[in-house]
Image (cartoon, rainbow, N blue to C red):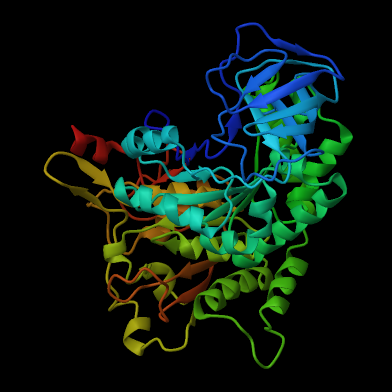
Length: 526
């Protein structure tokens, strides 16, 4: 990221209470259908074709009983491989379960994971290795998200947040991974507590009947869409682990995820150990782009408005939601080519993205200390723009001449090093569908109030807008240092012209960094 000057959101994936096979031999383990295989919690036993020691401390209280189904397979299994075995429990003896193999296979791979259907896993949500990874690697690299594996309820998210706070990672967000029945049952509470959600279809599909998987997926996607929380989905083109093309069913599946409101797709075995990793990424991107062209933005917008009761006498829509939805509605009405959003914490961008407009959202991350207003003298005073000012804003606040100037983002120093403020929020915005986050070079010689000029010039350079295009600008000034959108929010409608900012070269060498390069910051670091 430092070399390419491109923003990249980083995520640390935890192991959580996942169960794995211990003490494996170097050679693969061959199993035949009908063989008897014992699972044991005795960690001193060597793994073999007759016994597999597992990392779970005790089988007591797990609900394991004769007839229970158990899956053992390599990490990021695809389902089409012969390296996984399905077991049926015949007898439970203390911390041992005697099982029968239902298929022939060869157990191999980087790691072997164990999934017990309908099991209540009481292990801590963060393993010792997870805690160490967060406190050491995560804190040192200022990770943007922690992907919490096997999230069971909202309390698990609280545990992780406490650990992050203790490590100085207060800005790191939590992505809850729903991959078991317990997490699915508490999905509503998890969506409310998490910053983002990941539907792990591979693991969830083991403990959920095949005919119910589509319903769980659609309900979870809808819940996340209504809450405005980014939702990702896994396991889409497993075939491309070994083949250069996906099946028609897989290609249709990817497109339907886009049409159903998914914000992103997480590739697993296809890029982890696949033979066609680059081709996989290009293929999935191409399918998503095509599906985006068919997405019914207007119907989706109306469905949200109906949910919030906006077509009734008693709508249930807050001020922030009203401003965000107004920006999207205005963009649709005037057929805008772009929505520009100024944000401090990323919440404004998230709310605008929630309504999934047809045009892209260029998000400019600004400084919290100078977020009172993001005024542009030319567009505000020339009469070419239309201001839709939220109720409660005073005349003084709407006067562009009296608004505070802004330079974004900030850099600060503790005497030892310089820190760029706002970069974390910009990276985190990359998870929001349709959002392109950008940052300004912290060049203090820039004229105050020119950020909108530079943002539009950047959009013109990269081909997002042309002269004559309509642009909607969502500005959310704050009172003091509040972290929530106040009443003084503005939605502007402007027309792009051929104006050139005086005294500026207007050359953007780095795709995701606006207003020059990072030379100023590098000089400060030196």
